Length: 455
Image (cartoon, rainbow, N blue to C red; front, side, top):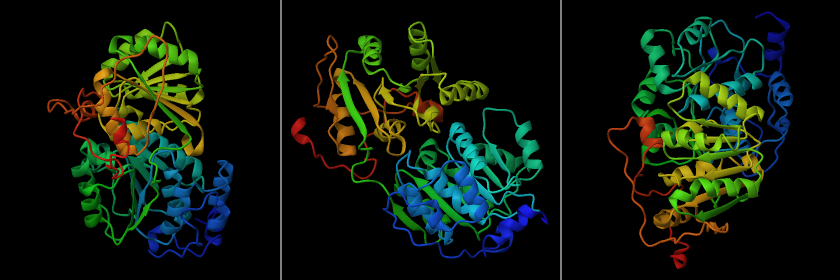
């Protein structure tokens, strides 16, 4: 605590460390809708600014411009924004700015999120933005051995990033103590509730001190989220940064009608025509991901598939290959794709339309990250015309028809497809492996049939 590093941290700001103070000074005023606000204008402490500069970040995204100043003032915040908008730094920076070296066992910060991949992504970002070499982040998630997590927690830490199920496991074992937590983040809260994590989330929040700051990040704010907010957040500031057009304008969206048995041949033609830098190919079922991988590998060796049945070490290896560029084509299910944040993705191909309309927005958000151009192409079978129209109604945008010679199919738009989840499936199977989907619900409250003349 007497090191020059500690002195630098304490001298750079008048704030007190997390363990001893609840108040936060007012942040510099920033227009929530502004673009390109420099991080320097946020008046962050010097060590954190050095970490941000070292990470190559210069200006805030609109989400960061809105959330960071409010969180710096100590407010509970609901950040409603699409994926790929810089939400991770938006909730990490306020915590990092307030952190000081301490002798508590920790953690003093807790981030809950829905998937292993997202936990690893956020943990890596926390390491990158850490204001000091003394700052310790421990990711905890299922699908991997406990020993490394147990050892890391025993050494003490500042921030725990994990899935609710594994956090509950550690609480039951007594290997994680939340008595000193002062900052809690629920990331992708809508997805956590969809997966069925609500009971675990509530148990965890009840174990955290009442005197804490809570941030909730979510693409949507349905009634289930509002109930959670009313119980566990104090006068939260709701920042809705969802654009009036729900999907990123720079993403070129198109669909191609095709008979089911011709989908693979169409995929090869699309890849030949588009020549993607990196591409995610979405399928609905885990076994379909494996089947498609076996077909693609002879033609495109740098192809991999990721889904919930793979061992965690294999998933990590595949994602490392995709981030490094050694894997060009990644076949994925919806649940497994959560946490994929690779800036070089030029194309998303919906080999299967998503059963849940909400997942369409999340899928195409894998490309066009933070303003970059991207392409999203959906394969639509003849009987899926109604489902395609439902997607258009929800995103409030017309998806252009594309065409490749020899792959035309009659497309009916009269009857929307209603899908249901098999009650015998597991939670992950129900989301990433279900043939049918729940009745349509608007992603962002857009249910107006704006393009009804197209039916």
